[in-house]
Image 1 (cartoon, rainbow, N blue to C red):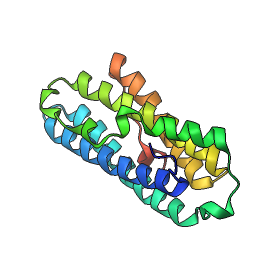
Image 2: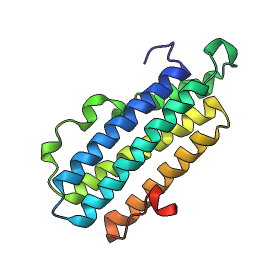
Image 3: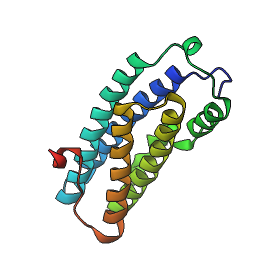
Length: 164
């Protein structure tokens, strides 16, 4: 990761990550369309990721210019470290042909959601209090919790749309 990795760039990476996540979830929804519950889970995750993408785009427009915000070296180093994770590499979502079992697809989703949660929390540490980001982090936590429940128990999945 470049030494001049900025907060704007980190949020743009979050936008790209949400796009890649939505694409993965849509592909898995189609792949498991014969298993209605699994396809529905991935469909709901895809919708949530698209909402998050738009939220991050909005956050990006609110981010102060680098020269206008205080430097927080350790927090920014942690943000850089989380951005290096394998889950933020574009090729993480390649080679999906090997995923034939719903549990494998759900496990990959869980790992992705945990990585994005940690990354978004790191953005929050650098950015400071931001209501939209706080909402995204809560949604990511809910995804992790829901996936943890589903993988071993096949319990029903709840998405953002279930709250309204």
